[in-house]
Amino acid sequence: MRKNILRYNISGLRGIVGNTLNPEVLYYNLVAFIRYLEKRSFSKGEKKRIRVFIGRDARNSGEAISVYILGLLNLFGIDVDFGGIIPTPTVLHEVKYGKYDGGIAITASHNPIQYNAIKLCKFGGYFLDQQDISEMNKYIDDLLDDENIVKPGDFNSIGITKLSSNAFENHINDAIAKFDIDLIKNRRLKVAVDFCNSTAINVFPPLFETLNINYKAIYDKITGNFEREPEPNINTMKYLSEIMRNSDFDVGFVFDPDADRVAVIFEDGFVPSEEYTLALSYLHFCKNKGGGDCVVNLSTSSMVKYIAEKFGFNVYFAPVGEINVTNKMLKTKSVFGGEGNGGVIYLPVSNSRDTIVAVLFILELISKEDKKISQIASEIPRFEMRKFKFERKKDFEVNIKEKLKDIFERNSFEIIDFNDSDGIRFDFSSGFCHIRPSNTEPVIRIIMENSDKSLLNKMESLLPEFQEFL
Image 1 (cartoon, rainbow, N blue to C red):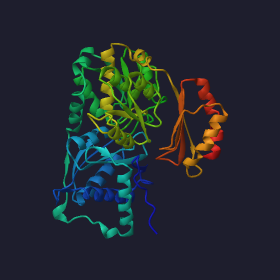
Image 2: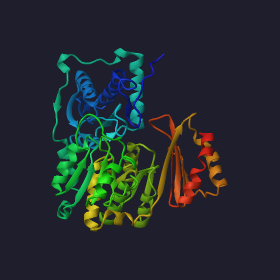
Image 3: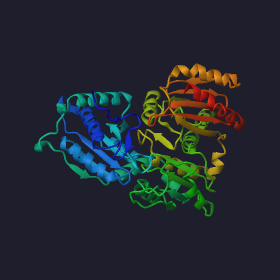
Image 4: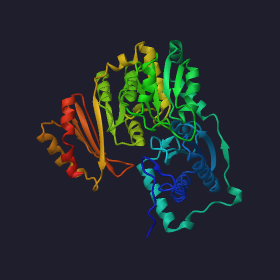
């Protein structure tokens, strides 16, 4: 009987360090990734040496895990360039920019300090998709059946590790080339920033210096720990908000530990939903940069749909999971997309969520419109979103959609559309409800949004009925 090994999924490989995430778990998953890369390591029929780029966030377990991963890859004959503490988007950008065979970001993103994780990407700077993950799982099965199926090379084939210090410079230079830098520089904006004691500290100060941005930062020391809960949300954004209320700023930015997500705070310290990062960026893209269709995940705010319809573009929906959005963007030939949790994907720069790009969109928007960010945001109808989660008691079955549909219709909700590609999303004239099993926890997530608060309250009152079937 095979061991029950924690396996990589669409959200990465994450767990509590020393418990669910341990050397054995890392070994099986990394060796499977090595085999995945080896299958693609041929050029014109000849096997070539594999190159991988690696970076990490600043949590205290990152150094030890980095050393383990670097050594393991070198023993299997893989050359590694290590970028140190840098954002996950910079890792993926460097894989694309430097034409590496793959990359690894060592980060548990917004999870608490006791967690860590790895996120794997392939040639071109794309995260692994479900087809890639299924292939990796086959390699894990093979290894569990016969541990001798893969062995490190001899001393002549050991890979080397080099420190790389220019990845963030490559990333910044590529990004700013897509924006009107002189316009931003001439505004001499004043920005408040929460760096979350992690990767954004190493990237955004040089970016702000380039843009003539005067900034004030909190949580701006790398210590191995986080001084606040790492996820940007209405509770954690209050610390920067309090500073902004007593000073004169144009905008505030709150990052998560690996800086693949950023939330915006208005100039007066008002804390909006983190959904505004994507919505404001897309508004600027449509209004001032030529515009185009957009791809978002099924849990993203209707603000994006409103903007697309206003400017005559389409919105395409993808299952939750960053690579699902990217793949849908490629399929629909959309250059703009993202996720409502503060992640903007802009293919001319990166194939993943990119906070350098998101910040540049917001700064250029403020500079171009010459208005307060709150005034610009008022152009978008306000939708209120509520998120719930509860323990999953049984396997989620899409065929329960008829039962859920009946609950809505009995309570006078008119369903105008639904999507069952990731759980079930019901669309109404003024909002939506998305019900799905989590990719990372044994829970059911329910995201509700509506522009009418009374209808949102009514929808929330149906939760006990939903839970009977979930």
